[in-house]
Amino acid sequence: MSGLTRRGRARAQLGILLGPVSLFLSIFLAGPLIIMMIYSFLAPGLYGGVEWTFYPHNFGRILGFADPEFEIYDPVYISIFFRSLRIAVTTVLITLLICYPAAFQISRLSDRWKAFALFLITLPFFASLIVRLFIWILILKKTGFINTALESLGWIDHPLEMIYTDGAVILGMVYIFIPFMFLPVYASVEKLDWTLVRASQDLGANGFQTFWRVIFPLTLPGVAGGSIIVFIPALGNFVVPAVLGGAKSLMLGNLIEQQFLAARNWPFGAALSMLVMAIVLILLFIYIHHETRRDDDAPAAG
Amino acid sequence: MRLARILGSSGLTFYTLIFFAFIYVPIGLIVIYSFNADPVNMMRWSGFTFDWYKQIFGLKNAASEAALYIESTDQLLAAVRTSLIVAASTTMVATVLGTAAALAVYRFSFFGKRFYRVLLFVPMLMPDIVLGIALLIFFVGVGISLGIGTIIIGQCTFLISYVFIVVSARLAGMDRTLENASADLGADEWTTFRKIILPQVMPGVVGGAMLAFIISMDDLVITYFVSGTSTQTLPIFIFGMLRRGIKPEVNAIAVMMLLFSFTIAAAGLYLHRRKR
Image (cartoon, rainbow over all chains, first blue to last red):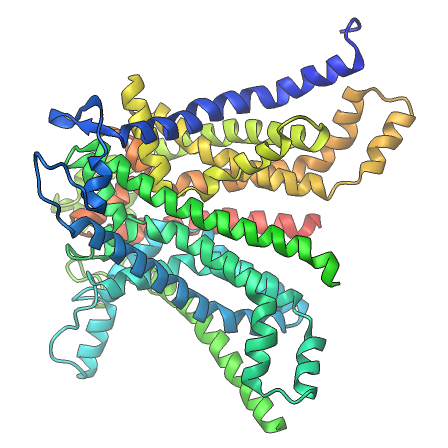
């Protein structure tokens, strides 16, 4: 050790600290992602294998240039893609509508109650996801809590069809993603400068104007952050539609799962998840770009 | 004006109550109905029973006499055991690697440091299904047989990130002057690390480890893809039950799981608050 220079020793320490984690992540994170990328351009072989030839038609099956030898283009995949997009966006909007007013109310509580409220909101995040979804089966199914209650009250004759619908999928996702949306939104609501709100009111703005031109823009970073954090797991979700959705509520996640565990067309499954990853990366890129620009602007504005 | 404000604020208070009701009433319902005696329709109350809890702990009761549910108890216990083994292993690996990475990024300046910070966020933001199938393709392609080992590796890829972020947050709030003082007083680097840095960073490490443990116990998607056919963790077991059709003892299992994770999370959050 004594022979080493100070610089050399620092380098050795850095190597010990960072070496194992770099090795681990390059083998088990970067490696698999690169292999998946390659797979998405390979031809599906018989019985679930792959053939090592360049084959762009995995993406073609989705986007409109299917392999002319074997099939004619079927828009079913692109329509599943748009369905997933629609369900994910709806989930984001509903979660936001639920969390936004609650964040305002909770930010104005006394410190003690505030801490307790935040505790109550964070707690479900740690509870098993599958259990929280299972609860909604019991509530929504034909012989579930709501139907049983409404029938015993005599309000309905036939059980309502609630489970195995798009609505149930959205409800399930909203329920599990509330903490994801609430915390970022709350962080920006908490920082909101109320003197600006008062100034706006003094200058004669009505409630809507104050909200739309002062409050909302100031809380936008939290809204955007929360929306992205909810959108990402919602888009490729396969657990919620598998548990609460019906055969008709297929989402991208279920389609990907089918390719791997049932249809055994791995390259096509890889192509589908490349699509999910691409959308997520584009969104993140836009978000980070805006955030850094906001940071750059801040000193000049203040 | 004043009246409107009072009405507005009480309206909001009412709203907040509904907000919390939406989160907690379903949880309350499942706890109540886990004591429901009705074996066919779980949501029609027909008397109080502990049967389902006895059932999951392997005790005899009317239902197990009828030999309807026996097979699942052994599977359940095996799934719990697998989950605990996986969670303990991943927590250990992810805590060591994540903490090391956080220390490296905190103490040293090196080429590619910014890159590392971003890189360590990637697994958290990656949709879990993408990571899950990438790992599946990788393991099958390389020829590693799926099982408990691949589950541990798969979970570590994203748990490292969680530990890294929790420990980094702790390090960022640390007092650097103490480190300098220790060096000025003649302590060598190792002593400074052991006596100054380690005690300060420890709460972050413990917090990161607890978070990793809870998330590992709960992970469904990545585990689902890399677990193979013969290994089941607890969430996978329940997921399978839900897809096949629900039996009343799932209620009791669910309540036990809620109790377990709420206890750990509440303890963790409490410790976290007290430390600050």
